[in-house]
Amino acid sequence: MLSHLSFGIADLGRSAAFYDATLAPLGFVRIWTADDGIGYGPPGELDVFAVKLQSKTMALPGPGFHLAFTAPHRDAVDQFYAAALAQGGRDAGGPGLRPNYGPSYYAAFVFDPDGYKLEAVHQ
Image 1: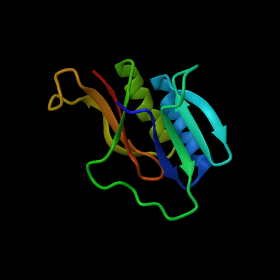
Image 2: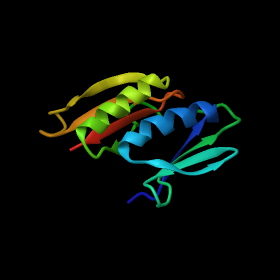
Image 3: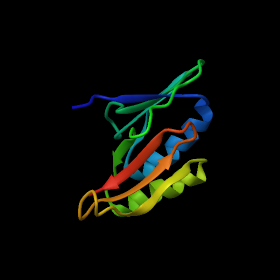
Image 4: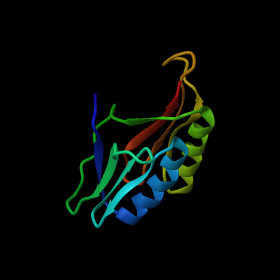
């Protein structure tokens, strides 16, 4: 359904460190790097997610918006969460089962350094 998604960010170095660390456990790597952005995706494929440096004031999406990444296993969800917090992310819901979403829905939620809400989920 979707080809790719990008977020506007305030500090490329900070976001690079954050996303390099948090997306690695999920199997995503840096696909490209430019002076004003970085793209991530599965190794050897096209980017599916990018961050782009913005010089203007950013407006974050409102309540209800978040980006969910598929995790290959539950340990990857745990690793995503730990890496996010170690790289300046904020907790938005630690790793665990979310039975209200489904009997095997295992997820963790964080806010990235710019305030975007992210999820890693394994089902």
